[in-house]
Length: 140
Image (cartoon, one colour):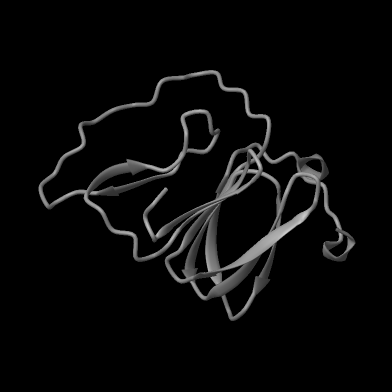
């Protein structure tokens, strides 16, 4: 995306992360993720009095192959190190209060640069030890 407040990070054809900075601000509804992603991220800004009609979500069978997670930084600063699926180091980004990241592929690690509170959203149910493969950052 060309917006300076949005960063899409890829490694070759592999989507790795999407960062939406705290100062992103556009009216309307903007989806940042393709329809194929198992986690959909959108920004919505409406004027006072705008209504969204009542609705329910239909039961739809979906197949989720990889966990995608969204982190919203409530306050603080965090260093995110990003890796391709083959564990190759790609780079790092600093996230601050109000920033959001969708971790949509590859791997990642986190370092709190100051006291940080964040909200994580990802698919469930949690698969325990089968949900992730840990690796040493120094072994790329």
